[in-house]
Image (cartoon, rainbow, N blue to C red; front, side, top):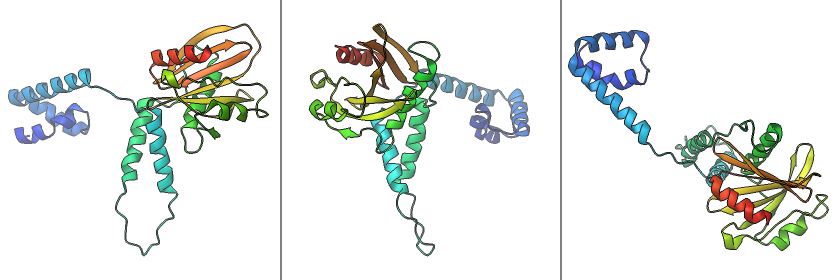
Length: 253
């Protein structure tokens, strides 16, 4: 193997993308060539530095919902006839790639770390409910920034009156509300926003002593559970944990 051939394969060698025979050829050349060995060492160092200092950004829920909605709209377009000229790959293909990245960065596995807030099975359901709400048409049954529209909407739909506090001045505007189904019961879900993030607050009657907030985290999502006045509450969002705790403190007042 010549040096030129070896150097064109160093990236693939470093990423372990070569076949066993090719790797053997590269290793054999490296054993006898100090110049190519220095080249490999430089690549390894650059890769290590990139991994150590790479800044990772997680897509907020609002962006995920918009991308998912855009893909759903594109897929709803009728298929073209065979005689029609092939259409150029649309922008939605890039959006689809964005969704894959967003899902990977958010770690949407529906699995909550064991321990922390509430029972694992219920935490799984709460997280799944939040993720499901990001799908087109699932976020709210009643969309309004006015609590006088959202709170009365729950009358007759759930057997209690959920809290819908006004938190606009604190930077948590109301988005709306919906019904959801958790742990074999219909629950109230009230939705708030924080910049490009969404917060779901699920609540339902649950007899028992008051309990302070306890939190858990699952792959970029934070969940906080508490009980007050015989009502169980769960808040879930991809919002930073400190800000979500601030929201819960304001909401529970």
